[in-house]
Image (cartoon, rainbow, N blue to C red; front, side):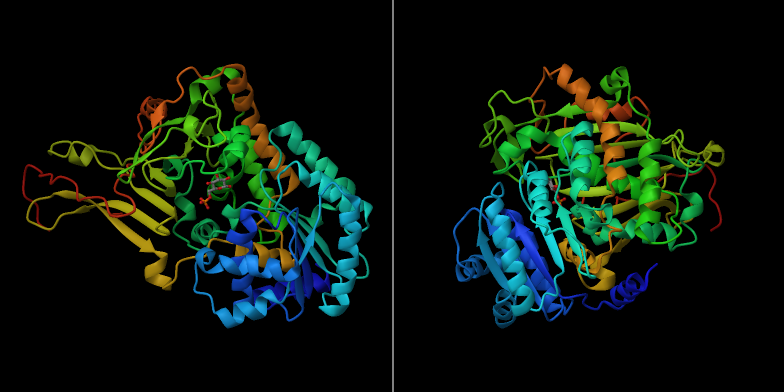
Length: 533
Ligand code: BG6
């Protein structure tokens, strides 16, 4: 570790601001900038986590002056910020915003950007450090990076850092992801590339590591000896909204699985890394991805389920079918739901299925990881009216009710033995008095500090696409015949239930989540003879 690395780690641990910088947002006219980046940057500013000298330069095709861009960002900040905005502080913050109009294909834009960066280095004291944020359509990722290279803007020299954040989706299949990595590396070193996955910015996702590795009682029971299977659910109430044209080219599999869901799976399944150093963590995550059994075409048909929502009712409101959404073909075969069973072939997990499902327009917004344990031997209860013992479960609630829940059987007080299923429930908001942030604050801060731990390394991205590719291939070759196959407001198509049922399992019932997270006490069960407490 170099001395500047260790300085950075110390500043980060202390929650101090890093170096002066300029941040260039390509695609600043888009939703991401207004909804996520600006509120997150403002929150960092408010939390004194940005240095005194910085400049944020928005670039997009619309014509704005610096002032108009500042007003445009000001218009909706109160709506998009999850915390209250101090308007006088916001006024101070927006003075750091600048704007350039331009076409990403045009070399002149990058010449102008170069001049602006030199000017702001003097005027705003940015010290020549630049964070380029590509909030653009994916087709522009290589275009912008090539122009940055050609204009000499991506070169790190004299201690000035240059970092590039790439939004998802990173490629649309294995070949395009490999190709994109190759193109980026013509201009950038791997350490300059920050492939973002906003799930890694969520506190509850990061907490999976803390929960597993900071608690002596968890890790010994986190393996195939005790765990029966794992369920990962990422359910959304929202449909595709105005993103039809993007979603038509992506679908649920590309949109959610090789990125967000695989982050949840790798953090849940990985071996303990030897440190929080980026490479140590990424090495272990990549090993998990590489240990996932690649599905043959036959097994794709058997172990992967796709669905598309029809019209239905959510929270008492009628919502249209996917095929009636704006910018969606009325004959679209794009899946809005995916479920599958994966197997991780390593010493810790062999034989433990990992079931995952994600869908739009589901009954409730819930993201959770369920670790379901094997049932204990039943012998003690044979001569009683207890017919079966409920398996223990650890439920990691990622959102919206962030927390962790352990369910177990307990004796209901009284002279006879009766069993009830109870939940020990930890909620972030109860214990830490605050709801975790959406995560862009953490991710932007880490980029500015030069800490890539929460970003994806090239080999992780490729390993993830390797798992997904056979499913894409089979589904492309065999278009679905039954779409739409689930009503909006349900838990997806019946085949997703069947996927677990034939293994003797069922999806955890989420109907009561998050309003009543505790499971109801189970039916009273009596043994034949009363026992002393
Ligand atoms: C995005 C997907 O990456 O994640 C969206 O493109 C999805 O389709 C979103 O809705 C879900 O994020 P979150 O933070 O709301 O779970």
